[in-house]
Length: 377
Image 1: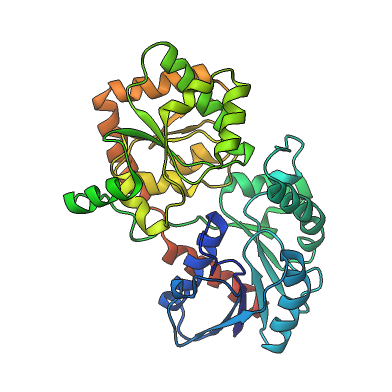
Image 2: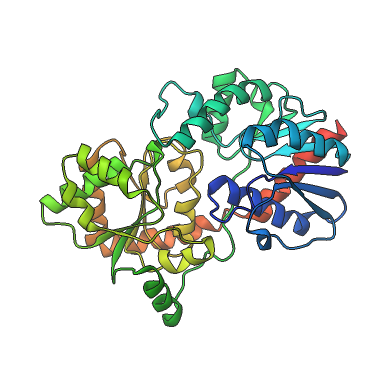
């Protein structure tokens, strides 16, 4: 077999969720399959060193263009010229006319739901418009749809009226470098590099409304008003003007004084940050998987996450769940976990056990099985 994999954005310097998932799939395929040939289609960008050379994996760097132009014209032409037997598009969307059997990884369908988060940046709004045009068309043509949790599989089948056999849930993994960092020198280096407080709460979010930045700031404001906020909140690469607007909307601009910002942190540096956090806060309103909470568990950090969408499924009883729409409940969960050492130790133990169930090797194995099923049909 000769399999094409769309991994358009894996060479960009600042990678995010779907980029990392595509990168990990490509990196782990050679561990599972040395017989078949793979052609990975990538948009030219800065970080070419992120991908090693493998005997049965050819990387084709295609010329830069806007996302729709690259996907709808440049990608299918390159796939046809490469004579691939199947094309796997990894990031929700795909060419309308692929010219060959198509597999789509549909991470989520939030942008198609009635309860859609319509705010966000101009880039996010454009991306959602493109998906709302593209996804309903391409899912009807796909030989198989892959998603990342049973929750999301059920949402997709319900929305499109699909039989459950048309969609397969393949869990994401956790990168191998996510381990608890105990080396004092590495921890100190991270503190100095990112100006970390001695102790802090860690929230990994962005300007996408589903990440619930407003809820987090409200919970912090409640704790501060009670004189129960012992540590600053650490945030990574997030727009400060957006945060100032959100703080204004909740009526507490002073809460920004309780936040430490690092700027963008490369994925390889995250374990040393997770490992120094008092707890990891992941109270999203809607997710399809939630890799960061599994990363935090692997690094030995107690996790607070949501009662909504996929979070209880993925957490598997190894996190403290709270209602993300209830800032008071979130505030209570934070202070209760900080004050309960027994509960913290229990969640760390359960989290380490739970995180072992998520593997990129297994993700690659299940994905390759899907390729085989389609091409043997």
